[in-house]
Length: 213
Figure 1 (cartoon, rainbow, N blue to C red):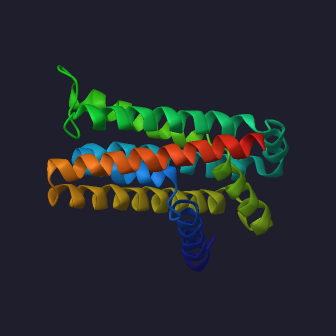
Figure 2 (figure 1 turned 180 degrees about the vertical axis):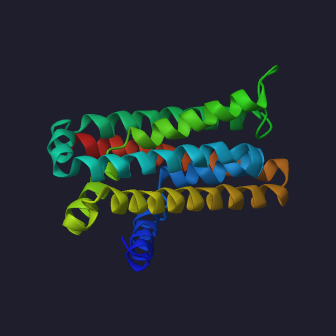
């Protein structure tokens, strides 16, 4: 693979990663809220969880190609339904904390920053990985590009571009939320938490209802 192919493949991966993450859905809203509640430094692990999930989905799609697509389709509506229920749980916890008046980003007594960061990483990784849509998205791209991605080196560069784009955009969302945090009062942050919880709840209901239609 020459330098021109390397650059074009990496660029294609960047575009594919942005295509998967730029449209703001429930995860995007949660990342904005994460930055607003915790600031950029403590919100960054959540963005890393989303970025890693997208990267792994891309790797699986490129490695398995069309073999995985029928398996995912046989799962039917249940992955989407489970993802919707998890979104509802997150929305309920967000609304509960907002109504109780817990200061944004406050952790239970004795919580260690490293452990808390790992938990936020795991939560956002799980919320992203439970949704099969990114896998189907990358499978469609893998099928569309065909033999161009059959070489391991080319596929690796493409997946790297996807991972960097996803991680970068998610970090931008957290940073935007953190910027809003520094310019808002506690009351404003509580309203943002309430709004975020309501939006995520609506997304969760929509996902569950759509899954069973």
